[in-house]
Figure 1 (cartoon, rainbow, N blue to C red):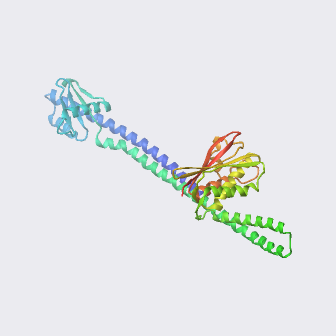
Figure 2: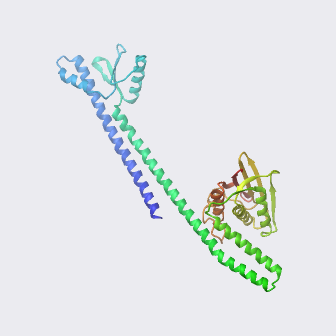
Figure 3: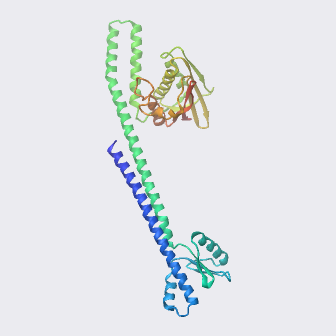
Length: 375
């Protein structure tokens, strides 16, 4: 694991531990403060009852107890008269009785009222402002920590993507560079063989292979670069790739096309997009074991253009719909498993489109869908 990733995961674990510890401590403090407020209200109730019923009580002490409560909202309900006496409660100028009645019911749901038996009254109370804030604090803290964890994951993801991009670009540029030397050498040998009057048909075939190598090198050189896109009729781009593939794959593979009659214009880098089609078709041919039908279907909806490429092969399990685009995933004995990863990168990074498995039935084939924006 990369050291930066290890530090990120360590930070996330520490953040979770701190959050849980903070939540536990906060809940403990809230419970202690709530118990303390309950005891204060019970003392306040006893002082109120003593002032009304006991003539020998120390009035200065009782008044001091009563006046000291400036934070806990109270409602004293007289059962006989139905009168409500508020304390530390702000109420509106109109509809006071209805407002206090609602408050009494609200207080009663939070805390059991304290009975003043001698006075035939009930004392309802609410949490103080400080206690309410303390109750909210751990959740606000969790929200902040969750935000930091989210940012850490986002930063880690961006870092991984940037690293992958650097690997892709470096690998592609180096491949293009390494191909350049043998291609130049082959071109020189071609000129030499022309002077030796070598069979022209042989020279033509070798020249085709050199052109193919040049195209491959050009494609690799464009991976990771800002590709130049140009308006292209998608029907023509697909047909060019089909014509090229028909000469290089099994004659038992039949191509079907379903194209609109009108021009379907999208912005493409045709050499790179041709690579996408070639990879998908070759995967389809492998899945069909060199015999079956490849179908190209172009459709439009609003400002979106869809290219569906279907085969009649063995299909793809639904659980593998996303995994097949991951680097290294392959069902072949030979190969690096980079074909579909490259396809996904070209479609999404170079053409700002989307690619996914639209559907697949075991034993009946699979359909890949490429989504592009209409020009």
